[in-house]
Length: 125
Image 1: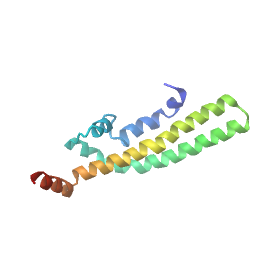
Image 2: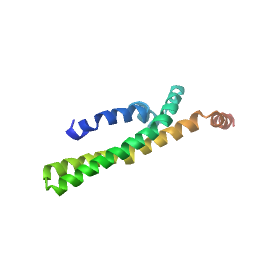
Image 3: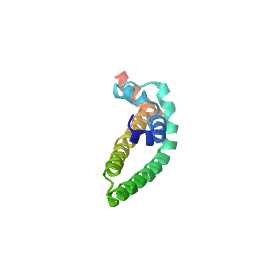
Image 4: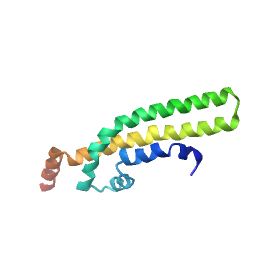
C-alpha cells in the first residue's frame, strides 16, 4: 500500500462500508444479482452519504492546501506526493460517490413495493 492510501485509509474504509454497503455488493449488482438482503443497506446509504460528501470536501480542501504550500516552497517530492494524494481523493469524489448514488437508486427501484408489483405484473404476461 502506498503512503497516500495509508493517509486516507480510515476514510477509504468508512467509505467502502458506508457508501458501497460492503465490498461485495457492487460486483454482485454488476452481475445482475438482486437479493432481498441487499435492501438492508438502503438506510445506511442514505444516512451516511451526506456525511461522506462533507468529509470529501474537507479532505480535498486540505490536500489542495498541501499542494499549494509544497509548490510555494519549491519542494518537488512533497509537491508530487500531495498531487498524487489529490488525484486519489479526486478519484473517490468522481467515482465512489456517484457509484453510491447509482447503487441506492438501483436498489430502491428493485425493492420499492410498487416497483416490485410492476415487475411481477410484467412477468405474468
